[in-house]
Image (tube, rainbow, N blue to C red):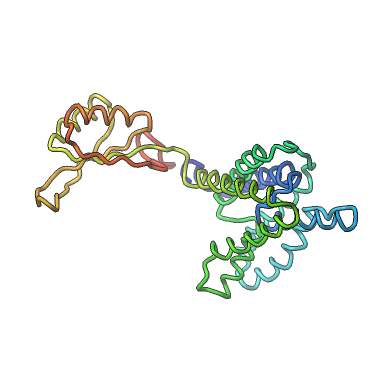
Length: 290
């Protein structure tokens, strides 16, 4: 998360508000109008709003359902998880509820379910990424999972969360349709990928491990022709029991072609392993914050 900047109280508050704002837009402009239930308390609130509308002609507002469900969870959480944890989570839950209340609901996509799933997932995932970067949550099923885990230690929080959210999604499938549930799953997948990208970093790169008898020539050209850093690591071939040098080089994606071309010209028999790198910090990439 280094690319997001050094954590400060002011930065956390800004990111928390921005994150809950984006999540609220996804809920009020995409998920609720399209009947996409993506899990969580807000997903359950969408279901309750639809059921109360069918029964009484007017649906119970999502923001109100969010309060009704979260209040008992926070009361229990105060005694089980402690005042400090609940305090931060309460701010996230409150800001999400306020934004859901303030942002006027509207349908952006009508019957364009695929577009809604993609946009909603990206929007929600960005919001979740910002919220989680502050080391807090918006309560709801996250808080419920932690409370259950406090009593059932052998079951992990992610597993509990997956089960709880899965149940909510299945309920949504019966209330709306399998069609919308499948698109909701697409939205969940996209949201997870986007939030992971925000948390783990968006500065993608490539790493190459190069094993060659001509390592000195290859290292020289990487340093002076490609103007890139390279490190030599001591290695031993376990079959031959011979000592070797393995070159270690991290470059931007577009520069990897040049590295491979250089290696193939110097030593066509070189053994090269190329892998993706999620985030790189240091000279030439993301500078460390002081």
